[in-house]
Image 1: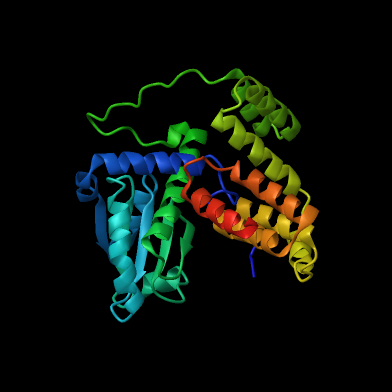
Image 2 (image 1 turned 30 degrees about the vertical axis):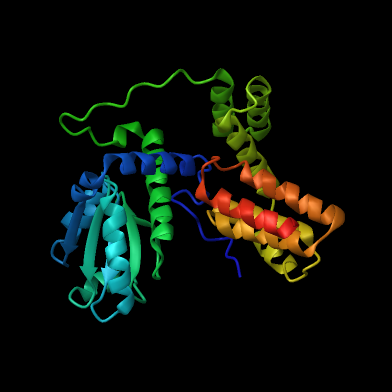
Length: 312
């Protein structure tokens, strides 16, 4: 059963632009080649070094905490994957490995119930994590969403951003932001979703292919559809398979919680078992969810193939 109360990122709701940033970051990592992986920080942590290596370092750099045990087969599977994906970040994150058998007090303090457990520590707090063996693609997606949220934190708190390393070049300034895009962001900051939607629509009228405006409008629409939803009531309504509205609203909530693939799969399942107007409504709803992600998001290609299969 879906859990709509569990936050999907640092902020409790997915940053619908962060996935685009994450994909761009991945492309930069791939262009950098294997040297990026070699420069990553990977440290073994004990109870004596936890404060210095994890808490202190997390104030400026996200720390991925791998709580493992030599007795757990899952640890042997997951740890090399973590080393690879964190290594690909080229030092922008730290992988801290904790043998819970040798450092049981760390596991107790973090209330670890099973191993392997992975936690992301940032600004001294555990902000997200998972507790199972995941394939590399899912681990990479989790880490990319974490780094996108960290970047969003620094954009909102520029004074907290650590200084650039000596010799590191600043990214060149991009073109000036479109005034309607600025107006939309300001409206969102002030809580005026209608004004934000109007600004995105003005931009799309001038530039129909503008991806930022398309994603922004889809994101605003998603928030407006769910702002008065009661997750407990949605869970109750899901017991009735005929309640299509509940299924679509549940997909919206999953989307906001970061469970993108789950949201897509839910609506595709509705498309499969319905016909006529109900099927068309579910199909159009799914296309609206697609608009909330960048065109090259890997989840889109998979969902589009599944939708075609469901329709034909």
